[in-house]
Length: 402
Ligand code: GLY
Image 1: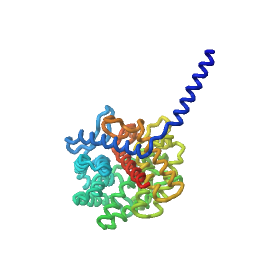
Image 2: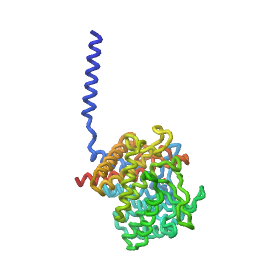
Image 3: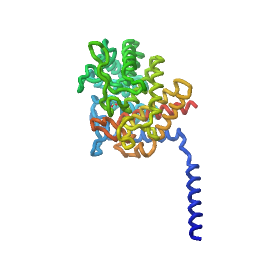
Image 4: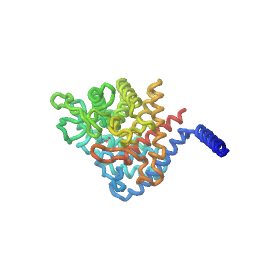
């Protein structure tokens, strides 16, 4: 008898669990997007308040003691926080967001004269570029033009590309990293509003060279290609932030996807669209892509499934995939949008999204900056937050059109 009662109770519990599981509805995507944007707004305002009186400081990450780590204008990530504030202000025109967007943008101004690095697009387009697009402030335009001249000074006619780094630990003559695709939009934008074709020509030449020399037959990308400055041809292909020279460093694949999607939008060159679609296929079909679609820091990390994730790679991919999904109308486009939705849902879950005030007021957890350098592993990063907010706004715009 006891056994019968136990069996009946067990069956009832099982039926109850099954029913509640099958009736558990997914939150509508529009609600997920609003949740993410509200959290990002809240966290960013708190971050801005914390740094308001710390002259020149811009958020970077948190250190091993859990303290907020900042930089000045010269770190490659200086523009992401002001850029995020501009995007959030555009989404929700609150005066406090605008005040802080202006304040933190001004902290990046000195980057316009940097000639020792290629990162001026990250620094200045995110900050001054978004600011100019939204406010048409003519002073912002002057900074952008000066910055585009500085970046162009790194272009080499023989190679047909912009030099990424000046440091050369491995006999690189002229290192170009896949990340550099992201700095081209800075040049195409300045070319459009100044009418100076030279900036667009440099961007297209760089994208053409990268398309020819940076990719493997499966459309995964090398991190570093160094060019011989006499012949203009590649002489070394290696990694710097990935697991190995032949591995697919996740953020590198994300930069490549975003870079060619953006360059198709900016130039209309069909080869860039095809490249972006092939990179998307590589990413979405990779056997090591986890079920929540937030990549491990390298698709070939040896300790998968225990390897750290890189939420920044997922955020960059999601933003690019939304744009790419609108460029053609076919099955691949639908798959791109579906993958972006899965990434946004995951990033907006408790696993990746900071709770209020958590994570030193960064928005996302679990990014990886430079694993081989033993730096920024499983931490928040300002660029993860920037591209997450951009992806949310792109998705919101799309949902509003439907
Ligand atoms: N160099 C930029 C990055 O870490 O992705």
